[in-house]
Image (cartoon, rainbow, N blue to C red):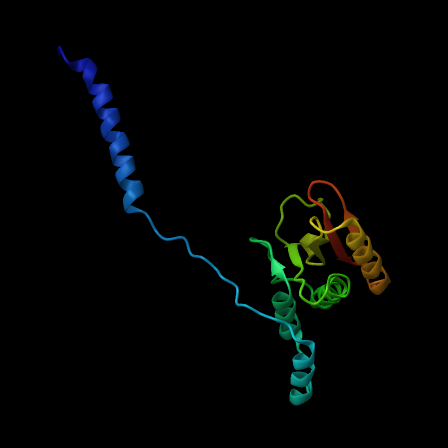
Length: 173
C-alpha cells in the first residue's frame, strides 16, 4: 500500500509503450503514383487517326483528356458526361493557343470537392475547373475570352477569382 501512488504512472508508461509498439508494427509504405510521361504530338495523332479510319470512342476521348492534362490529387473525373470530355479538350486547345503546346493545363476539380455550391453542376458531372491561378493577367483574360467564344451556346465559362482562382466550365442546360 505504501507504493500505490506509483501504480498510475507505471500503467500510463506501459500504455504509451504499447501504443508506440502497435504504431511501429503497423507501418506500411504509402503507395506513390507517378503518371506516365506523355508528350502530345498533333501530327502523330492525325496520322494515327488516318491509319485506324475510325474516330475515338467515348473512352478514347476521356483517355485523351486525361493524357493532355494533369489532375490535382483527389480529382474525380471518371463519371463525367461524355460531352464534358470534348469540352475539356477544347479548353486544353485554348490553353495551347495562348500558352503554347508545351503548357499542360491542370484540372483542379470534377465531381470531387465537397465545397461547391449546393446545386453545382459538379455534382451532376457537368462541370470541370482548370487552374489559372499562376498565369499572368493578360493570359487569363485571353484564355477566358477564347474559351467563352469557342464554347458559346454549349457551355458557360466563368473566371472565379479569389484565393482559389480557377476557370469554371459547365455545361448549359
